[in-house]
Image (cartoon, rainbow, N blue to C red; front, side, top):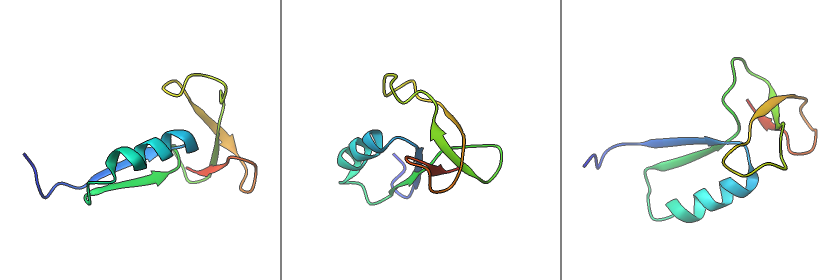
Length: 71
């Protein structure tokens, strides 16, 4: 319906990112940003990494920590 649309997705979990890339490989107008949406610039990490993939949330972190992503 909108052939010129651009889709930008934001995802902090590496497993969800991999699934997203596989599922959208055929679409040239889709871009993935590995990170999290936050109120200010910084670093984030998954606060509940052991939860189900659809229920993750982030908390502030430090650059260089394991599994930290830009926020």
